[in-house]
Each structure stands twice: as C-alpha cells, then as structure tokens.
Length: 172
Image (cartoon, rainbow, N blue to C red):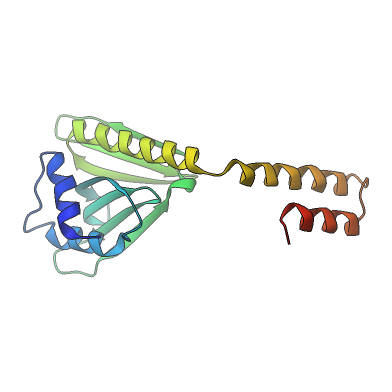
C-alpha cells in the first residue's frame, strides 16, 4: 500500500505523522497488501512495544511496533475472524483501544478518546463487512459436515458413508 494512503487516513483523524512515528507508519504501508481496503490508521503506544502504528483493513488489523527509537520493528497481525471483542476507554490524558482475540488482549494507549471511538467503529465496520461478504454456502457446508459427523459419532453412519458424504459436500 502506498504511504500516502496511510498518511491520508491518519490526517482524517486530525493527527500527523512526524519524526517519532514516521518509521512505523512507513512499515505499516509496506505490510498492508494492495488488495486490502484501509478503513483506519492511527498511532499510539503499547506497553512493552513503545511507539506503534495501527491500520485496520478489510482482512486484518496490522500493528507495527518500535520499542525504542532505532530498534528493530515488529508486527502484530490480528485476522478479523479472530477478534472476539473490541472496545475503547477515554481518559483525561488519552484513550485506549482494546482488541481481544480470545484470551489475548492488545491495548493501544495514548490515543485521543474520540479517535479511540473512531477506531472501534472502523474495526466493527470491517468485521461487519467481512461477515456479510462471506459466502453462505461455506457456512451451510460446515453445518452439513457437522450434521454428518454427529451421525458418524452416534453410529448411524459408517466411516465409509461419512467419507463419501464429505467428499460430495466438499465437491472433492
């Protein structure tokens, strides 16, 4: 993805990319592929990770971290389908964005409360659009397989019958 695209999303929030966070935002542009739609980009800090840049796309959330100036950058990638909850909190000195994927909770700090709320809304929008774009046949195939697996487990079907039905459902 082009850096200018990231920069424009950051500017939409009334923020700037400056000397301290330019490196993480440039790396964010490098890791987001061109086939991903960018919903939101913001900077902040994370405990033990230092300065961060976060991008919310149609497929994942990308977080690029730099613990201290000049240290190696690292990436945290959260596929949207692994997110179990997202929330924001506000405070006098800044807000937090909390993204949970099961028992793992990622907390981005030092974000203006209004921007934290925008981030949560962008994540929820991306989740909603991803859910609505999933083909329903995928879900019905999974339901069918579960139904026949239960019949196999209950002894109603033999392994051979189950395997044939599975191949038929999956068009193998």
